[in-house]
Each structure stands twice: as C-alpha cells, then as structure tokens.
Image (cartoon, rainbow, N blue to C red):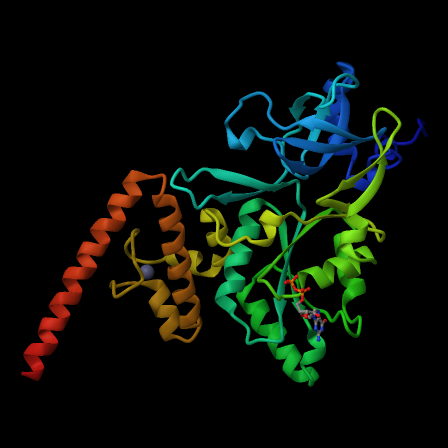
Length: 370
Ligand code: GDP
Ligand code: ZN
C-alpha cells in the first residue's frame, strides 16, 4: 500500500498557501513550473503595473500580456500569474491562470466594456446596515452582482447591536432570507462582537470581498477581520528582488484567522453590473414560475395563463418580488443596451408602445372626466 502523502499537502505547505494557493492552482500551474516560471498572486494594480507576491517576496510586474487593450486580458487584483523567475523590473507576466471567478464592472463610459475589479473571489460578503430600514431591492442587486461573478454570496447584517429586541432581529433575518434563497444571512455587531467569529470562520476558507453601500460598515468589518487598522496593515514591509526593504500598499490582505480579503477602491464604489445570469439566480422562484406561463415571452403583466400573476393572486409570491425583478431586468437591459444595438432598438420599441398606451389611457380618462 502506498502511504505517501497526497499532493494536496505540498500545496498547503507552499509559501503562497496563506494567499490561497491550493492543489487546484498547483496543478494548473504545473506546465508553467516546467518552463521555469514563478507563481504569484497579484496584490495590487496601479499605473499599468502590479505587485505580485511570489514565494520569494513581492515583485513588480507588467499588467498587460497576451492581448493588449483587451480589458479582460489585463491583470487584476486576485489573479494568479506566471512570472519570469528573474530579470528586469518590472518583470513580465507570461500568463494568468484561468480565473475561477471574476467581478466585472460595465464601465459608465460610452464604450461599455467590462472592467475586472477582482479575480478568484470565493465569498462575496454583502454588508447591509441594520441602522437604516432594510432595502430588499438593493440587497437583491448586490446578490445578483455576486452570483454573476461566480462567488458565493453571504449577507452580513451589520450593527445588530442597534436592534434591541431579539424577536425583531430574527424577523429582519427572515425577511432577508426570503429575499436571498441559498444565501446565508448573518447578523453581526462590531460593537458587541456578536457573529464575528462565524464570519471569520466563513471567510477563512478562501478569498473574500466586501460589498455594500457606503456606511454599511465595510471598513469596520475589514478592520475586525484583519485585527488592526487596515491602513497600517496594508503597508507591508517586503523584501524586493534586490534584497531591499520596501513598503507596499496592498489591496489583497492575508487575514490572521485564515483567508484573504480583497478590498479595491473599484469594488467599494460598486453599483450594478451586467448581471444577466445573476438576476435569474436571485429570482429563481420567479423564473421557475415563468416557465409555466402560457406564453413563452410572457411579460407577467396581464397576459392570460400567467403563472407568475397566479402565484401573486394566490399569495405565494410577494408582489414586491415581481417589482424588484422587473426593475433589475430593466436596469440590466439598460447596461446591455450600451453595447447591443438590437436590445437598444427593442427598448425603444417598448417605450413607444408604452408611450402610446399611456397617451391612450390619458385620453380615455379625460373622456370619462369631461
Ligand atoms: P463603510 O462605509 O461601509 O466602510 O462603513 P464604516 O465601517 O465606515 O461604518 C459606518 C459607520 O457605522 C461608522 O460610524 C461605524 O462606527 C458604524 N458602525 C460600524 N459597525 C458598527 C456596529 O457593529 N455597531 C454600531 N453601532 N455601529 C457600527
Ligand atoms: Zn407570466
């Protein structure tokens, strides 16, 4: 019987293991290792270059490779790269390992091309403040964005200390759970420490990002996870290739309790992305019902045989869910329209039809009143 240790153990003792290196990355990297290339994870991107943490320390590298000007081909924080083992400063990134997940922003510019904000994220932690009234629609958007990236979302209800009674808190958790099928919902308080151990244990298994509105408590959560002031921890002292100590600012941090946190300015300001598939996952029950509508292109408006409207009538589907679904679908169409002329034409036709209907309705009303 062969009792030699499995290959996973070599990945877990690898110097990059705290950065998320595992048996999967090791086998992806194997052909590059054969070519003598060095593995590394991108911890920061700025001014067309990046900092990559390698087994020997942080090195400076170029961000563009393979296909220049293709934004999907530009290195971003969280990427695993294969670098030249030595040489110039910056080094060349020879290739990237295929991304497991990616957060993509459709830019607000006219040329609506995606911009990668973070790669290889396992957990998307959506911070939602309990200090203000829950906005379930907003939570749904963040969840759509998270699902679209490929990461597993987790809703963290922050500032739980501000909700005095436990029953009230459990109702809020239930509300969010109903809105977020398949998503864990965790109330936490940075003040009392409630829930933080569960959060730390969750994020310990992989790479996480914090999403959420400004004021939701993201910085506070980051600080508690890191166990110190983020800005201090971010300024790591590294030994560069020439043996000098350098100070680098990182957007990818190793957590003391295990796991990695990516926190880039782009992710902080995140709004709604092109989340077509994500919408379907957030509204799985609506899309499920829609399959039973009589018409395949049912708008769930007033069509005969509409299974979605039937579910609302039967009290099985809250009307608010359908409204959020419509809104999210509309916004996704809007983003898609920036690139897709066909969708643009469809939307214009829809506006015209709605405009005509609106005018007709107004005239009918006037007719009644006068
Ligand atoms: P960010 O904008 O999402 O990074 O939010 P911050 O982390 O800056 O937090 C916004 C505000 O909420 C700050 O004034 C924090 O002190 C406060 N805050 C954060 N977490 C908690 C908490 O658990 N309880 C209470 N009461 N306040 C909190
Ligand atoms: Zn329908």
